[in-house]
Length: 507
Ligand code: ZN
Image (cartoon, rainbow, N blue to C red; front, top):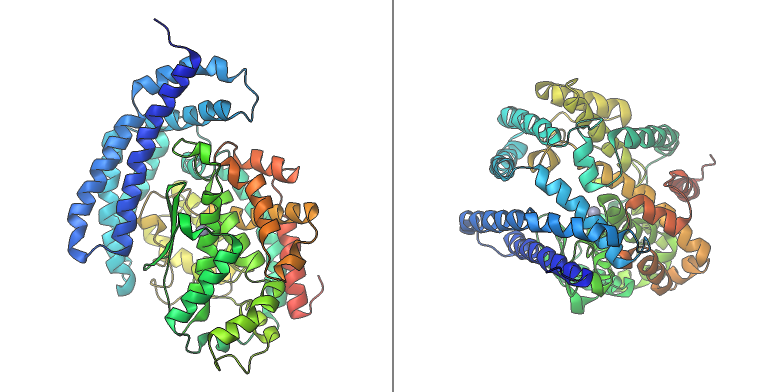
């Protein structure tokens, strides 16, 4: 007895929904771990998460999914490219081929190794002790090679990991993009840092937590983050997480002596969350029901954090309200001085605290080091020294400690080496390219931002990016939304315009 095509499609969706629900349940446990769980809870939580991940892996590799995909593909190919079912079969096939390559024994071994590597890093970082993580990092590198070997035919061992985060990208294509970006950023960085640095001391006065929270939540509500389908909680490292279409949460941390920390991280995470809240409801629970790639995701967080949240128009509207939120604290600071403070550019050591102009240099350094480690050109034991040399060369500063050097980021200690950094810079590049396309369609957007109105921008992003979830790859989405291929030109133009104006420079 053969089933109708629709019945087989429904059977596929049914199975994929089970995988999705197991991952979502794990995400709730992870969120709780970061937000509420008492310290002694970690052992039980680790076991519960491992159980859910194992079940999810078993369901995701079920041979019946492969059989259903075989049966559905000839039909899906007759459908229009942007049809939901065509996209479902396309993306489910991609996910299935990837997940069946990696034996569950490797996944378990990796999970166990990462738990240990993370604990070592958490001790090594404050202790400034790279030796503590060296052996573990060597094992991570070795496992990264083994992982790549599950995908024979790759050009570079980083490619399978890059492909997973930013489908369609390779080490070679990212490298070309980053080389050009770096060459065009350097003159900008040199010209700006030759000027007197902006005074950002006004951001380090006393700002009570409850008032910070009230202000930033008011802003993201105005952006369009829906608190009926989300909430914000406190954590150590801010993040966004999706459990379902109706439950997309963000977290933040407050520093009463640093206004920008919680404020800009809240704007950032709200951008990730609005992307997830904007995915079409009918895609929820399927492989299409979430953002399409690390790069596109980061483009949305950076749009709301930087292009909107660090713009002059935004602060011309919101600064009086910010002053009123903290009575007396900012009375002596003009909106112009405040705007300069939140856009201070400096040669600095820490990626996550870097300004818009130098940020990508931090990413490009890490990306280059990842590739060299994977190519066998850079030994783990030489990493701290080479890290310092690259910082000196590319940014002009280098850290005397490993704490603020090679140990600053969690990525290489919480997963494999490769694939985890390029998305940040791709996101910056894409944010400007998407924003330009939105402006071309609606030239009134900057004026609206200056009046605290964000609906036109939000609607454009929802229609052109958010609603599609994972239906289209990054390059397909860029082509549809902007009419061309990915380009660094809009991003360089954005930085040149903004910082040229701020620092009175002509380029
Ligand atoms: Zn982000």
